[in-house]
Length: 301
Image (cartoon, rainbow, N blue to C red):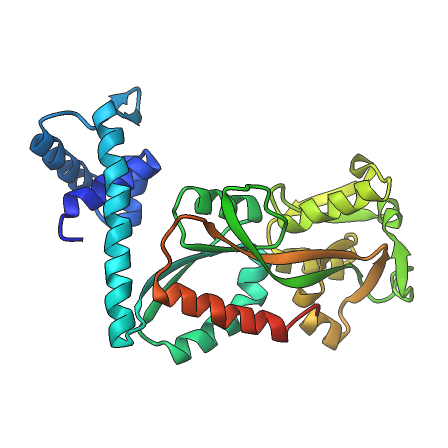
């Protein structure tokens, strides 16, 4: 955008934080403050109220923010229209993915995409499902890929593929020879659990409740935010866990873990999520088409 001041203002207004805006724009905080003050001087009015280390938009700021949204939308449409005409597919896409997807699904997908479209720069942010949905809601990322149902009806959600969750135990465990077990069986053993906000944890709890099991009866030995840490803890005999089967290819091949189906089975969607009204650049359309084909060929591992 030719007017850098408006872009900086828009970022501060969206995040309601000069510090976060400076981080996102790769600028110093004084530089961000200077750009906003320049815009305020142009309009001869304050655009933000600053009280007790918090900021909020003034009436004038809200009006400028509304028009800035429309300006950037039109700018994106213009850019996309010209690129369509020239056949150019480039630009920067900011993706967000929950942990399971970022570590076990996206590396191959994005590697193949970059090989086909080397002029597209992809920035990836990793968080749990709740964090990714929040970043999509706040326009911090262009596209999220999450591992649990999304309840926000203001967002566009498109199911990508079905994921299969299994109980994991170390070889030699008393359950290791079972083909499947009732989901309630896991409350009899120390459990290694994902952190709150994790899609894996959310789906597991919903499945237990659907089977008439109270999740508070679980013997949670520890909560870990890393899938590799969970697998390592189970391999060491510290407890059992439930993880996506897609994350266990190496361990199952080496025989360091055993995967057991639950009765009833636990499935969940991997889904794309983005703003309904946000204009998609051509690079985003190409990435979505590329990802859809990948998902079709990797259904229900």
